[in-house]
Image (cartoon, rainbow, N blue to C red; front, side):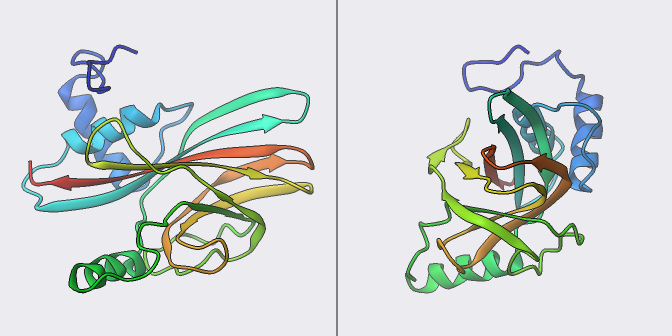
Length: 201
């Protein structure tokens, strides 16, 4: 995949029509079949914006580290749903600084695939200890990126992920539901979460 110096996919890899079509599907929460590059998804969402003041969306990708069996790159596994709770917390912080605003780095996993909603405030069935993720800027200045690796201690089918601002409890920024990632004791899952905040294009 060819990229420019800013990390964006170069024109010609996808036609503008394909880019808009992909962006529309992703906005509806539809993930293409096969492995999808997360940056390609971000580019499609950004390029399909028209007349929007501000749009916030989350993109989640994953890699599985199999104990003694190498790495499985799953690519993009979910898009959407930045929560109402995070939106309200953001507005509150614009009025007065609150504790833990810069701490949305805790990656949690669970085993309940009830459909995600922007009104979610927690995972439905959280398991394992939350991972403390990194906090960096993504490929462009409008992307917040956190990478965290959750260690697995039992045979599980992981189907939900959440990003919180606390090692326990805390405010849920985004809950993602995806096809089961089947793992066992000694495996680990590396999640890359990217939240993009677009100004009007």
